[in-house]
Length: 399
Image (cartoon, rainbow, N blue to C red; front, side):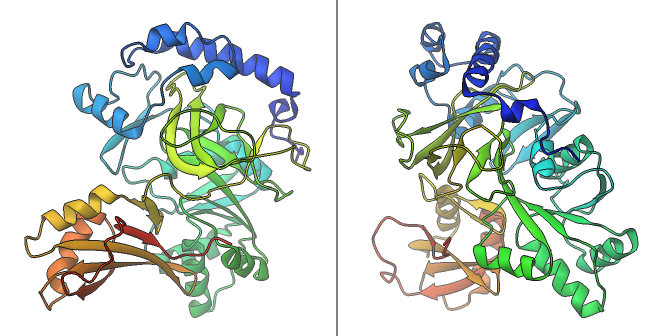
């Protein structure tokens, strides 16, 4: 197995800037839908340093465009082989060309390649995550067990019988599989794990290491594909070669100096679905220098929170507007707060509800409908919750 996925990973800074600028010019020329004044601003972009002249595109903008011009809002999506729906709803295209989401680079850096069998536990239902990692596995020559989520006992049986050597999925779910395997008295052959869709807490990474499993994480989204990934150097996350990443001051779109924390804004160079200055809502910072592994692209420090109160629980985003929708469903509820915590290396969602009701079961169905997750329900008297503007509180430690 070669050390690098391709020659792009070791380009000089000047070569990378030149080639990405050329690709950017092509993507700008292909834009078919944009706000008023965008074309004039785009005409002033001559280099990567000029990107800040363009407005930031937010998911709310994209959602609005899609409602007016379904399914992709008028964006010139080409070579579409799959149509995906993420919570919102918001729609994303998918292609079948080699490494369309650029996940192969991450899997290669994680030591996965020909001869590996990847137990892919990302969902194949509506959302693109399962296909993203399957596409990446094909790019590195690995075979795939398209396991999806749930049916843990059957997953253990398949992993044992087939001889799966690698896991792909959310950080927490691998522990559920391993615990079930222990319960069944089965020893699995998984020695590598590639994870995303949620935070990989240091204690959980160590738990897997103690069981002989090397775990690496990526930073990817349904809209953009892979954005950044870990390597064996384990010093930050290296930017993917198919994106341009800016760190901007939240609410302004203005780049901040390297090392300063700001919002991650990404320009995708994917010719089939170009997104220009797409705001992720995630916070991070550019690290100084390059990775000791020899890959020369910039690095970010990883996920450092959200620019808003949105948080990810059990691999699913929970947004303030969803909490508001829950409150609207019940006239007797004055306020609600979602609390994210950890128990036994697993995410836990607790919903505190201000109400005079006494039966928590009254709210379980609405919570599942609006937040898309099951959680504990705590009923508190009206006036109990702090009046601090928070509707989502994350108590998990990322240190």
